[in-house]
Image (cartoon, rainbow, N blue to C red; front, side, top):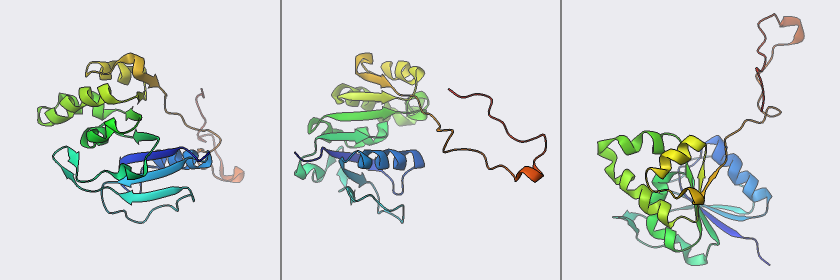
Length: 185
């Protein structure tokens, strides 16, 4: 049986650190990952062997000139609501997951100049198989724009305290102002 094929759409390259960590994690789980970028990629991190980087074809209106799905992907992932809106014609081609984060739900839909985004949210939420929200508040706000809460899964961002620690001076140079975590969990 071949590895599941995932197409991640609408990124700039190199992506944000948290997106790159997601791509690495999917690759370690032996998914066959294709990352489709909007613009010509600039130098970035080395890709794991089962991850490919491709450039998306141009968009005419709200339709792609040609679909990157000719190879038959098992699932689509849109890390940003705006990517799902731009490439909404692909939502009919495979099961899909859209991530909802911050300003694309809390701020942009309230901007009169971003009416297309506001209108696109309901359409893409309706077509998505599942929607990842980074908080309960984002899920509730997205519901105002057409998200069926039964499709939503809240996965809160987190920091691995074993990986991300403030750099401490050597013990001989430490004073009483050494940063200390206030809590974890």
